[in-house]
Length: 169
Image (cartoon, rainbow, N blue to C red; front, side, top):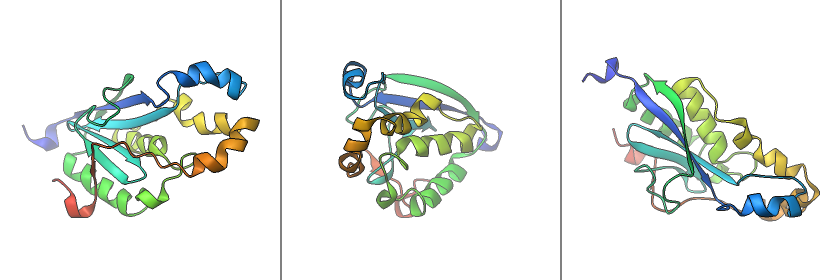
């Protein structure tokens, strides 16, 4: 089928990096309930795309060491072709989403997937995910932990880093 006449499903994969511990410990540590520590990715064209300390990466869906996602959200469909999408990703990877620009609280996997979701479908990812950093930082314990947490770069192994050199067209 001609790609120009096609639409492609877009999914948000949601992983709880705490594996349920945030739900149990956040009331004690932060004084408020957090349901998880969210890592997200976008699945489109049969690949999972995400951002971390290594930059923009891809793998088969569920192919990182995180395994299958905890939740899958259908974001809608896109008419953007894979070629245009890969060019867009390479541009992002060379500018605002290079690995050295990763910041756990301000510029992370969730800001990346939110941007991709809007580019592909016009829809944002759920606000409970994008609001998580401000939820944590609004607590005294979050402020104490910030210097330590700012040094963390999450890059789930098992993926290929996207760059203009290895752009798979």
